[in-house]
Image (cartoon, rainbow, N blue to C red; front, side):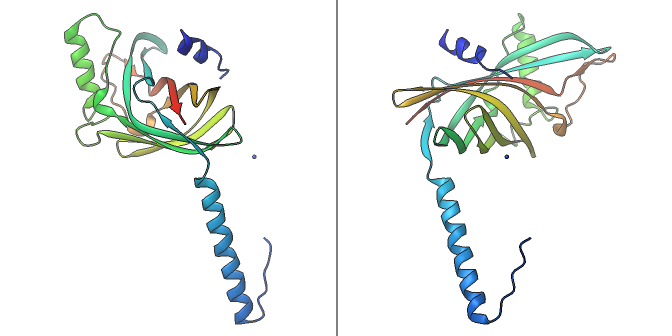
Length: 213
């Protein structure tokens, strides 16, 4: 119930230089290197929270479209392998996650045979080609207290995303919810439906994470 309430709370920022000698050039280069090193250190020394994979969950939702109308839908889960988020003054500044694409499950159909067929399709070259690309990687590039930004690398494609995030601070841990739709068009998902039906490239993602300090 706590996960559901958390997810429901989400509501879907040339200066010219003229160098007059080799010594001055060296000094500027040294200063620039020092500033870059300090910047990288600042970005990598945020307050780290590590993902609890046992209590965290990714749910996905897909739709089948015909004549501009939804004629079918599926939903299921996929599991985290590991991950972390970095915070600075409660703002998200970085992080990384790995997802086990072979853990894809489907929960919306009543026939075990139909479920197996769909899961096999999702793991095939038509979709995520999990035999060749078993792990999806997420790199968090930034955000703040209400937004998270990053890059999802799945199969051989990278997709940028920006999504609303709800963060609840508890003692020595964080619980967060993310709800958004991601356009998987770069994967060139096959139609599969026939008779004018096709799988919508937009896949809904509902993510609950618990992270421990």
